[in-house]
Length: 183
Image (tube, rainbow, N blue to C red; front, side, top):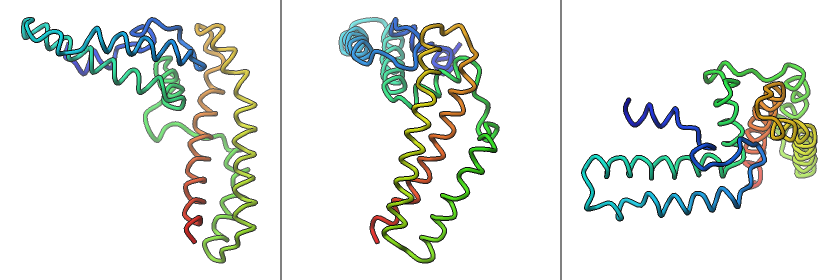
């Protein structure tokens, strides 16, 4: 089994000895990362065998990748979905149709801004997106709490996946809106 295969099979939560959780204790994560950074620093193994040096380099790389994945909330959500088998290959994860229907008004407002920019309309659209983001967060928070209390219960994961996909969609809308900021 090569490094890449071991790396993909590594459970980052187990690597840091942290509970599987959407709302991770970020201070505990930071402490585990720094402890591992010292433990697996390649400079401390320069007199070891080449095999041991390679192993330490792999562990150091995993430590960095695991930290960057778990420290970023959105990456952590996707990672948990992947870990629990609730993430399909790219292009196969679908947004709910009712959400897409709700987004029609916002997408139309962005198209109107493209044709005829209006500062007030842009601010209204930005506020609408911010409101949707807050509603999305408020609706998913109990889902995350339910999962964190019992990570073996997969029933909250479809809602967590919907949250992640909707949040990514709203992020793209915000990026589209940001192009008007320079006007």
